[in-house]
Length: 312
Image (tube, rainbow, N blue to C red):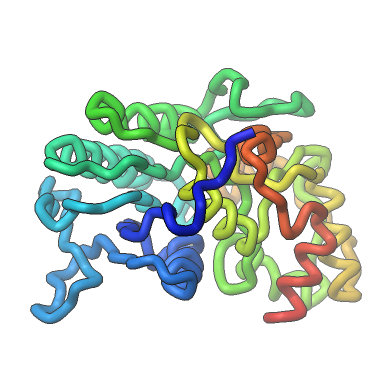
């Protein structure tokens, strides 16, 4: 088991891209409260007096490289939202390029620094594994098939230049992040509160989830672990089926769970996006996190949902 770095040795200077996203927002707030010096990569020109913002524009291949000097850890969470729009050819291109271009730009910049960071934590997703049915997945499992699997493969490969420069790279393969302030849970809560929640498809597809609390604390944990690199599944140790997820959320809200959405309806409404996001199954486990000594705050779905909804 990897031992955490002593508090006096914890990396103090953190740069985060995608800081306004679901995980990024909560992570920035938490790290600042813990005393880290956090700066953000932003796509608008920073104010002249701002010391917390670094300008970059992946579309024009620009980043203020010199401003990254003396960074201890860079956390790249950038990427086009995969669930906002049906996957047209232009949307698929945006999803892929927003991840690969930004990651290549960051990797290139870090590799050119006089004092590069010791660690790059780069976002990825469980989509890497594709549709795996009831197979139990960990970080040693082979990549799968499908659009998201290909996106994740190219996304992770885009860190090659940073690795070649001797920077440790962690690929953060996140599952469904539960937070009432954003993501899938925020979108479905109104439907469930109205009594319109229900099972999608067979309901037997596995859903690998993690609470926003554990997502943030796990990333902080990874910052403090020396010599850890490679893929890390950012999920709880207890995945559930879609049916169990729906029934649990409905029970907590004291609402019925009577609606059934057929696979055909999902495909007609959402196309390939619906197929991969709602019907694919990935029963993933956080082997790397657990072996490194991370202790989850929410190991079971019901306790996680009750905690989130009680503070909403």
